[in-house]
Length: 93
Image (cartoon, rainbow, N blue to C red; front, side):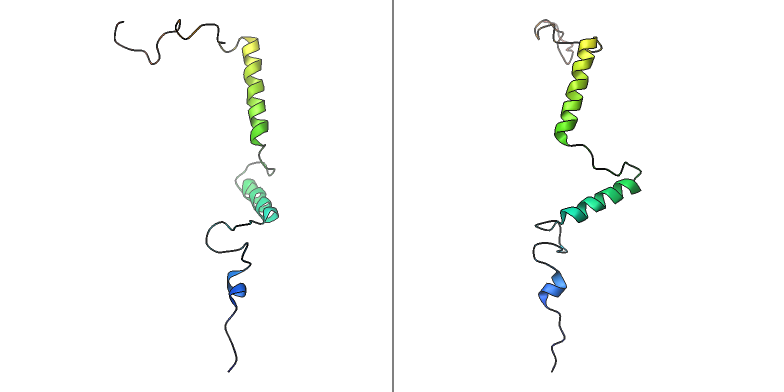
């Protein structure tokens, strides 16, 4: 009688990736990047990957520094004790 069942390897795929239950232990980075680009394009976003967290932090830090130098936002001229209480309280001291 001939053996007609597939092996576990054929059914489940490679043991380090392509499992059907959640994220594989070692995701295929190239395939994941291609999928990310295609999904971003389908959503109407630029196809390239978003900038790194470090680059985003530096950009926002530079923007805050520029706004503080231009006087667009208040700087820490006053101490905490000299400022009004936050949230404002309805009780008198």
